[in-house]
Amino acid sequence: MRSLDKRFSLTEAEGRFQKACDQIVLLNHRLGEVQKRYKMAKRSNNKAFRYNLRLKLAVIEGVRNMYYDFAYSKADRVAELRRELFDESVKIVSGSDSEYSSDDLE
Image (tube, rainbow, N blue to C red):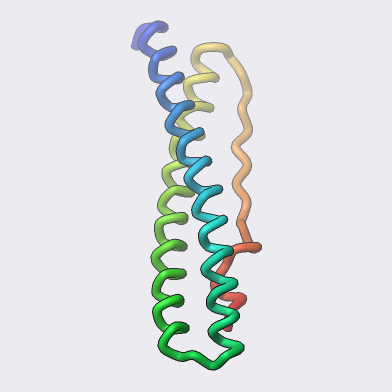
């Protein structure tokens, strides 16, 4: 692959990585909001709302996890291209986001 093509690929991968990170932040915010609503429904013993909110939590977490996987693959691609183009050593740090987990709700 030519150097110019790699630079375009790097720019594209960095843009997609940034967009995925932005979406993860939005999904974490949404997850926090739904968790608050779930806890209120649990306190008031409203089982119908609890069920619907658990379903929403499961969907939001699933989408967020897919974005995590996508962002990680793009970060890996960015690191690879930076090594090839600029001889940079890029370390990819992955962390768990335990603040927004539905496991805490039970």
